Image (cartoon, rainbow, N blue to C red; front, side, top):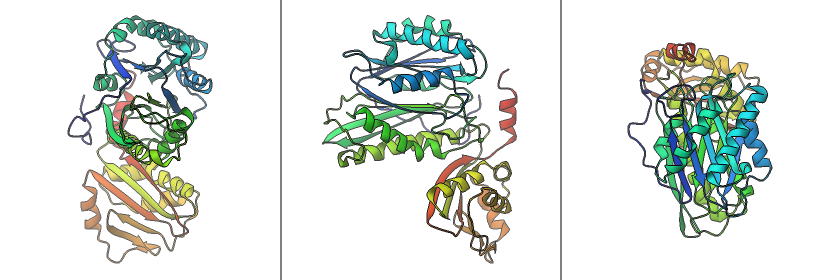
Length: 414
């Protein structure tokens, strides 16, 4: 496998989270000899929060998680929670068979961990429309349970990869009530990436003590500036799931309100971890050679700015121009116009990085095509657009669209 040219140059150090142990195993869900199942055991009395795809064809695993979370998401007193994830098969569009699979896996994992099946969260990623061979997952549960470790972060991250070219992890610390708290997590995603709540699979853990309601608010708001602000190919997955668990073992007084000033540092650290993970997904976009930040200002509202930014970031014409290192700014004008949001043609401003390209409804007098072409040769690019009608602003991140994307997806099931 060729590693993305935008991949991090070093493997991140991931701090253990008190109350969390992980393990990975090769179950042969789709491919033999490939690590493809991850199990996490989360200490009793932990809180958990989740955000999920809004797809109308979401997977049985997503429906299971939403149901468990709506039911309270807690294990009986003194019992742990668990997360079980497989790659290779999305268990989506599998009808009653998919529901039977998640029920069987949930019961089996609960038995292994000595808890209730309503304390087990599940996620699956891979091919859509094929029955999940859940017996293969059940067959490796004893091995997974025996090897649970506080240090198996990289193994767990690798186990959930599909077309990813590198595992994606991030870690940070913050302070609450004078106590140092840790946030560590991992995610997967490379293709079928467009936000509609979150995107892809992501699992984040902290030893902070945070009540479930506050944790849910923090996760949802952090998602908007991270996983909800990326796109690779405009396709929303059937399986998008992000879970955030808080074990409470750092020793801080429980945070019950997301707006509690004591948690401001924690929320900043959580935002940073999730944004880091989201950026890694874009950097591993299928066939990507450019990491692109799209900043839109001057829109009627922040929501309108987000629509315009995504219109630019999702445009195949814009993305292929970046792939070809062609500073074709007319395609950005087109994308702004097709967004459906208000923009003042005669006040529109476009910049490539710091290079003023267009202003006052026309190409800037100072712009030179050679400058734009030279800028496009970089691996990290920024498009800055002001649409001249208000104060709304938004930033999204995307990548270019290359022939390699076609190759990867044409061969996906082979």
